[in-house]
Length: 242
Image (tube, rainbow, N blue to C red; front, top):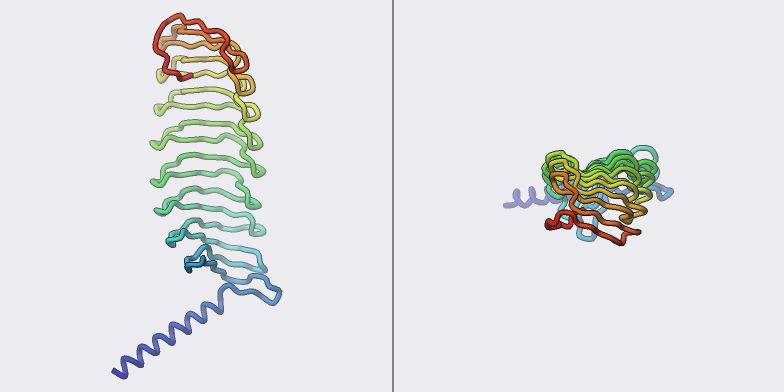
């Protein structure tokens, strides 16, 4: 009995000593008040928020961030002055949510986003902290759903949508974040469904609508988004999609 009590006491003392050593080696400030070495931040409940290393108050190396239940939320490999990183974020189930690069804490270059099952959902490209280049969106089954051209954070250029079988669904253009220029909509069989033009975000001029065998079904005239005249040649139900 005495021996068992002695062993328990030794174990407790060792545990307290180890905890004290950890406290002595993490979350340290130097004489100038700058963070040095390994740091671990916890919330009020004692759950780890993040952990990583500092040198002269500048973060470096790999930082890890956690959900409230302790699951990994993000991992960042820092470079430069500590404000830039290659980062992966994670869904609560452990699958990658997004992967990309930060420069001066702003998104940069290619970013990819994934579903909880690991399916690629979208791709975005950044330059100078703003959206630039071709952004892509995918169906959850995998095929390409949409492409959109960005310039300096605004939609500028071609916008295309696709059916799941890869056939084109829509071609249109943006200018300074507004639909502007010719727009063409397609049936699944590739036949033109409707076509017309946008002017600064509004339908304008003559729009033509066709049946799925290319017969002209009706025409509509628009003035700054307001329909002013319409003529029907083939009386069929309108599904409301343009």
